[in-house]
Length: 226
Ligand SMILES: C[S@@+](CC[C@H](N)C(=O)[O-])C[C@H]1O[C@@H](n2cnc3c(N)ncnc32)[C@H](O)[C@@H]1O
Image (cartoon, protein in one colour):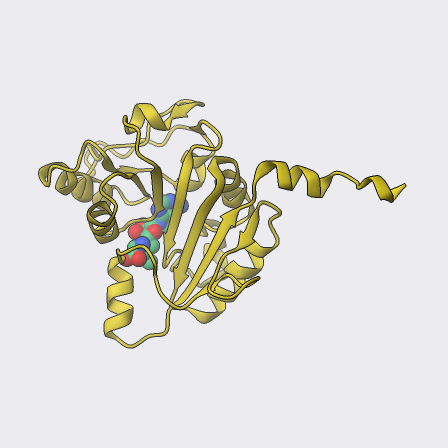
């Protein structure tokens, strides 16, 4: 069912990810620069910092809260960035399943996702096999998935989930490991700034999308298998 905010919601006019089965990234953000998507930008600081650090990139934030999509997209437009940086209201799990074409996104960022801890809130978790399948479909070969959290157990869970997906290979500081000591993108999320100011350790994970031919080859039985 198509989500409709109640008409008297104070941010009912927030810009929304379009309806429809095939939403084209080039129609959403026209241009030729590489496309990067942040899932859950919240107050949006990362989008602004990343826009400055990567002036050629097209950036899309998918934010489930109408309030932050409205405020951040408005600020981007006021700041003259609206042509190549957008913050749209969406449940990223649902929107990314409809985004096209395959192999069109250079990077996905998930900064401090999923502040849900109770069992009954498990259905809200954005990270999971369905999301990872969409990211694998949308990333270009060699494209990046960067995830960070200040909750140690969540970092371990994300490493387990992403590590189990055949499309992703770890691309951290040491060969075979997804762990990164620093954020390499020249841009931090609001929560990341807070975590650093509060002296909280941050778990940072980087993965690359395996080349599709290599994934195919890994799934084919080798000639020696008989
Ligand atoms: C803990 S906050 C982190 C905000 C920001 N990424 C940061 O690091 O400062 C998580 C954000 O993800 C958003 N979010 C949660 N589930 C989402 C979903 N399914 N789709 C899009 N955004 C989601 C929340 O509304 C919130 O803005």
